[in-house]
Length: 113
Length: 114
Image (cartoon, rainbow over all chains, first blue to last red; front, side, top):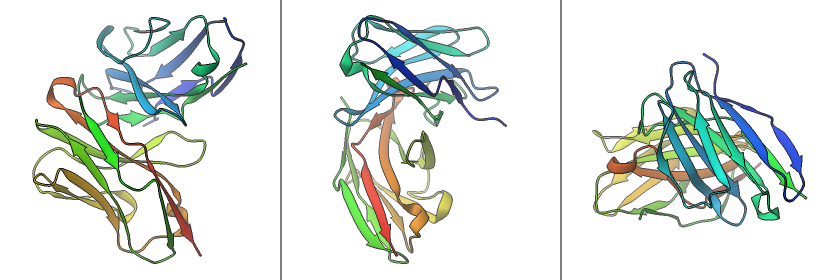
């Protein structure tokens, strides 16, 4: 069974631009969570989606948003990029909502210049 | 709020030596506990999990962890490490009301020397 896939793997953007990251969960998994990883803040939870609905949201500004499609694939969007948004963005999937056990993709490395 | 403390940011050991990576959490409610490993330029790989039942949990690659409720700890151990175990290890916790949200420690960099 294929793992969690994320596209693109690397991205370079300029301050003020917006970006969309994509995540395809493991086949049969219905819940997708997103995390931001930086050297300064570590791993921080962004949001969780299940059945196209956001179930949990972390402490991030409204510039960070996401959505989930009927096939469980998910996208996250960051608008008006700031230098501090440079990070590794990780997507994780689990079988059910609040499934606890999450499986991570390889991440998208976003660099904002 | 959940809090996860990994007591050592770096742990250097020699090959074939035993290792323990320490993790403490703060929570007044039941939690689920996990250890993940991250190799350079990769995502997180689940090593093992504690959901319920036996407090000694065995995972992949010869790792095991023991859940100690009274000490709110979930330390990771391996009796004999290999150079290939060099990586960053993260302890994580989630709880009943927000199971889809993992709270992570700051990570422990394990470096195995020949």
